[in-house]
Image (cartoon, rainbow, N blue to C red; front, side):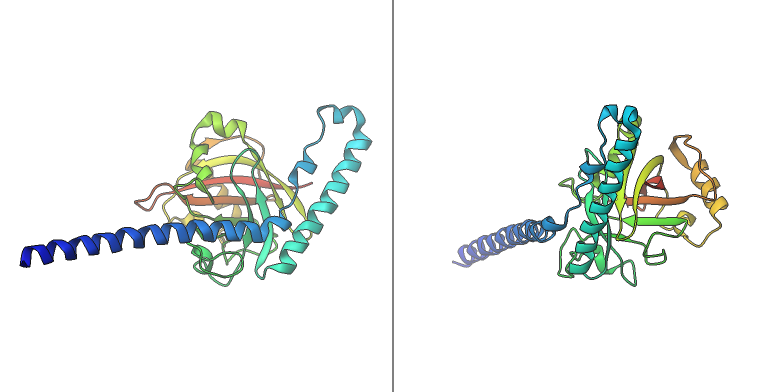
Length: 253
């Protein structure tokens, strides 16, 4: 009788753990879908910046298209920022899953597991290091995002370890309320999470020299202390302190 009770108890506990795990998993998935629907009306249309292949032959027309696109993107980003506190822009890397609003708070913990509306969300949000200027006017700008197993958030950053992939996806877009930037990616590195790379107050020349020395992919696009930079940082894997970081130069369009 005692053995039977033990077996029944074990079965009940196993069922509770199983259904509890399923509940948590489904809750996270449902939470992500709810948040995606919330921000859907505010997704900037970066395809507006993809000029026709023959645009070089019509320079004036191409410039007009770019001006209109910039205006529209800033308006869309302003709508986002008006509707979600702490939102400061939107980052997009074409042909990847990196297409998210950027958040900013007083620390680097709040948005680790919070959605853009501040509610709990396991995957968190993409956010700018709190020590950076919230308008991206500083020389060094570092964005953080989780490396999720479902490929969301900054998981695609790890794909850039492959040189061919890096070369075929070497630009992105950043839109703020006041400025639209093209991001020219030129570096892929894997610093430790406590590395001096994350000291955004360091001298820019020292930071660039260190980045170059520790990058295993480096495109010579011509960078200097006069430029502004943005880095996309995520965990390399589920264990260890290694981070995979893709860095680009911000070029105002």
